[in-house]
Image 1 (tube, rainbow, N blue to C red):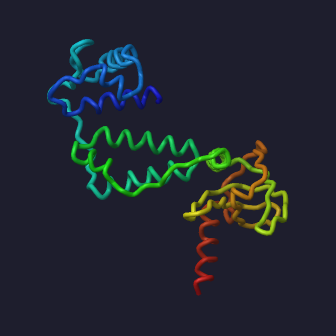
Image 2 (tube, rainbow, N blue to C red; image 1 turned 180 degrees about the vertical axis):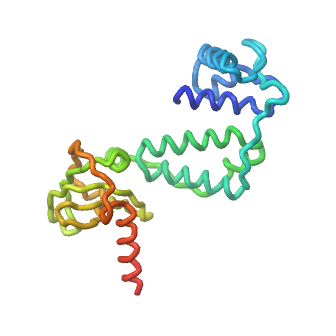
Length: 235
């Protein structure tokens, strides 16, 4: 856990408490040593966060300095929990870890009744990853990073019939269709938008070249083209 995330969780663990929270309990929740908790609390106090207490006694936020809770309905919270479970099951490892960290931050500022509701939702996305699935999750992370950094990719790709080709593409987005992922791109070979299934990518190489957002071949144009394509199929 990043130190910034840990400090955030310490503050919100103390939010609204009437009794002191023991450092040992904080250490167990955060998965760190007592010494780390003592140091983090001391740093927060020095930075102006109104934490009262000391080692061996426990900690409280000074009266009148409480932080307002996030306002979620039970249904809104359940949708966040379910969404996090699906990201953990089907997205890359980096996205999965980030989703879980975000949920921890949200739960840290929730009233007790809503926090309990978060643990009771019965919609699951079971996580089972053998080496193949682990490698695929790593590929999703790489593709997502290339999209974020506007990195041109060189793909060794096999289509549905097994025909192989080399493609140099500008990756624009990833889409999950409930059973398969697709990578939306501008394909330089075909000089047009093309979708590729990551599970059919034999090899993915980051070329080191970055691409810009050009009219007619950027994300907005891709989405417009896909919308027109699927509307045409429905018609």
